[in-house]
Image (cartoon, rainbow, N blue to C red; front, side, top):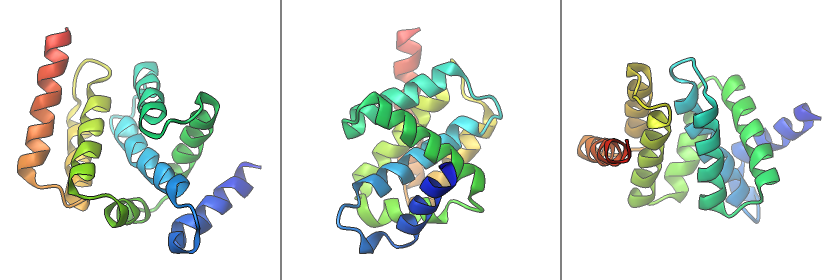
Length: 154
């Protein structure tokens, strides 16, 4: 069954313009990019997964069961993907610059979920921010804002 679902999303990611409702495809692409940050340090924690779940529920107003399915599909897509192109290109096509900066800020929040930022997480966020055409100054700004919030909550 997972193969059938994965095939469906592979087709819709490859041809998003042929769908009437592109929201689910954008949700999957966004979730996949966020999953990339979670797995960057090779240590996926319960805190990171809980924060990702919360982000997706809040951002897309999805039922928690739908978010669990979306997270599973996103993780499967990331495992099978050769590169980030299919996810990044869809996000760039449909998100304006401010929305892409917001996505980078969410990446930083995920990186901080376990209390510190691993250099591998920072490298992955930098790479994704570059691919999303987010400027270096906004990459740094979102990092510092997130760091300030996390140190203030500690």
